[in-house]
Length: 536
Image (cartoon, rainbow, N blue to C red; front, side, top):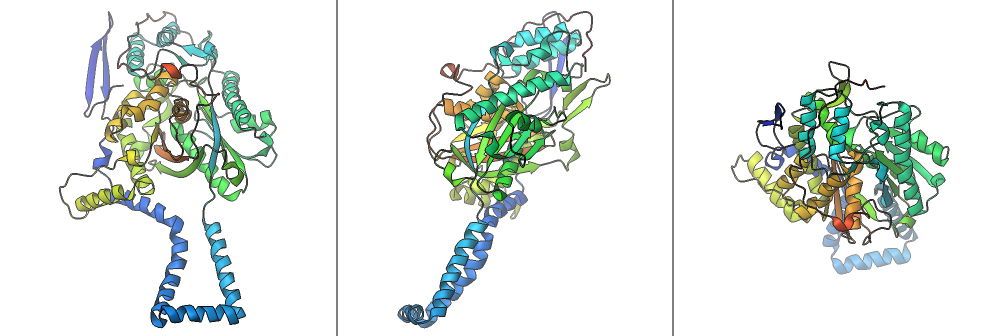
């Protein structure tokens, strides 16, 4: 996927093959140049809302107290207070009651702290490893793709940013083609239970002590649900708040985190588990529409499980504290709603269509999200410079150059959804990030591919495996998803994280990072003559 500022038509001729015409429309727009004032105000509103009630009560009280002190004088005021507390029992009781009321109100209005105790990522077995050449050979062997589609997928694989070995379900690549629910359930069970077993082993938490369970998977939603599979496997409690999120794309993992956070605000002393994955057994596209073939080249096996808690006793061993979540939904716009959609082609093959407007839509959603997030996380100096610049342009119609906030002053680590090389390139350029900041995202795409909503956790695991996360460091997770959505989560490290013994990167971390070349040549195979029908 090549990124360009304007519409581009790339025409290439493979060896002995026909011309390939790949059209690309608009990379991510320069979203920081076109910020809307209403999103800044929304971010400021979010910042002040949490303190508004307390300020509403304290400000009038402080004003009255100051006025009375000025009227009586400092010495006389202190003498009056002492006399009241010494001889007036009613005043003592009233002051004590007011103090207790204020403290109680403060704790009731303050949100409960939510900690991430630990997380675990699924590391597929080596039998699931596959090279780009092997994947392309398999696509040709099915006989379901024409030569143009094979060559298109070859070009996509060469420019994808993926390494030569990632992971897919072998059950879906063993003839005859099998897209049954049984195969998909087996993949889901292997994925979820492996990460959950590791999580329970790491934390020592009994599954019966978990009160909230949120599972997200976009394309596979069986009955009973995936969350019910987990409850059944681990024999969880009967009153567990079990929720299954489907169809919400690659940003659903942060939606699940936000939902679990809200549930932990009303359920005291609780554990919550978020389980994120994408099941690929039923998702490959076996048609010849190019807009649906991209997902075949990018998506790979992966999953993660996260343990959250609002228990104060977990503060000492927790890895991170959840500071903010910001969700942006552009579904009211038809263009945004339709840019990523699952549908059939003219021959009845089901696939996920990626619109040519995807990059533009993603840029607009990202602009809205970071503008809302900015007032919550940026240092005051950055906020003032940004707001002054924005007001000058929007209110006074001045032609001054927009001030671009430096988000590196707000975060030490960036976990950007590894959706594709082109998206990562544009975000790096627009946010002026360094290669070091982008390394977790690029290496996740290189090693594991696009694992959908779980990619953010592989990225965080990479930073931990490198020993980079220090106490007090701030981590920004940001993901995009169909709808169209852009979601953010901000974490603060509670302690310096030592490289864990159980980490999906342990087998290769010493060899990384590597320089990802823009084009790794894949030999074009010859498609098989007879077509093989895919079973449903």
